[in-house]
Length: 102
Image 1 (cartoon, rainbow, N blue to C red):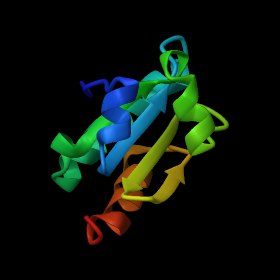
Image 2 (cartoon, helix red, strand yellow):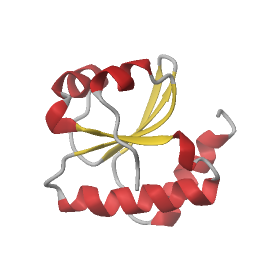
Image 3 (cartoon, one colour):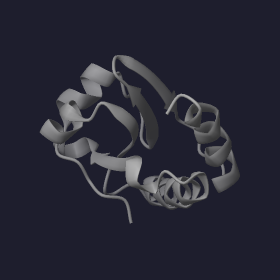
Image 4 (spheres, one colour):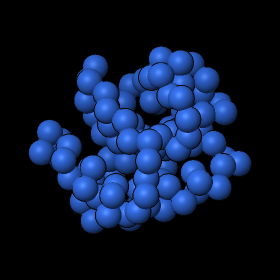
């Protein structure tokens, strides 16, 4: 569904969305479906990736990720986070608010 980035790829990725997940987290699996569907609706599916928190502890520290799932919007040094993903519509709205910046 959503392509996974390594820690090095994440550090090089300048602008777009990264879903921070844990492979054993059921809520993360649901959030991944929401984010995938929302990215298709917003027309940005090629700009959405995921990262496995279990394999990238330094990213969690650097980005101050306190829980999973977390949807991170990166734009250079600017960061925004969505932690509560209630529905596809909720994610679409959040992404749409940032799409103008994209």
